[in-house]
Length: 309
Image 1 (cartoon, helix red, strand yellow):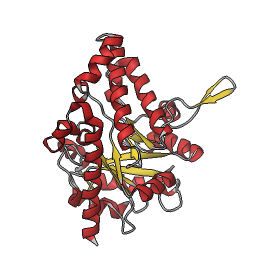
Image 2 (image 1 turned 60 degrees about the vertical axis):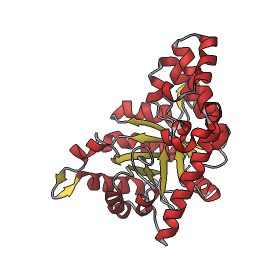
Image 3 (image 1 turned 90 degrees about the horizontal axis):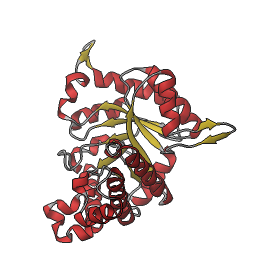
Image 4 (image 1 turned 90 degrees about the vertical axis):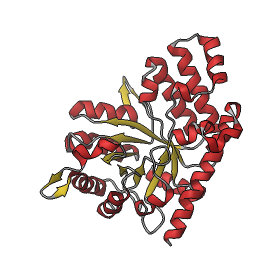
């Protein structure tokens, strides 16, 4: 699947991923009203609203981008109907030939980790049939429990030719409380990055590993170091836009071949119509606002990479 991601980045010339992280307050009133009229102000009504919201955004941007990243918590908050909307969203994005990165941040050990890996990336045995439960192409994984938590995912990745993005240096302000702590004189995130490179060496595609890393756009200098530590790992870069990251901050996340990173924007795109720059579209044309925001993001990153030379 890493080869498909690279291929689609080359075709679209857009190393970006749209985070499908719907909150109800992002969803225009007319979408909510229609869903509530059918299902009431219920969990089912909320799930229908986020599904219709997602669908319209995807319809407006799928030809511009290589991938999407639905964050499962935004769906789980609406219970079983929300999880059903998550699965519906994954399937719809795949029908549009988008690569789907399931932002699930799983982290456990043994049979529990194996169950997470099978549930999101693999196939589960039901009688004589093997079925794909969620069927994302990539999943995000927390490495805090060590190799015991990662190995089951690696096994599934090899079998299914799918991938993972391991949390290395996250974009949130308090990430340094643990991730920046010195261990034998080196920050912990560097040691985790080395393990990502080691795990990835056993799970290679043509030029890049199926094992990638999450490194926040809000820490560009650390990203520069980690790019060298993990030369064969794709870096998923959150923190662009709403969290403060911009194209000029991101150039060192990429390798000299112009590949090696994919930059995420969530509310900066899906709620673009709420921003002053795109307010002229209005709530009724929120999908068009999202399309304009994607184009602007692609331009910003492309110009920054071109300026790097």
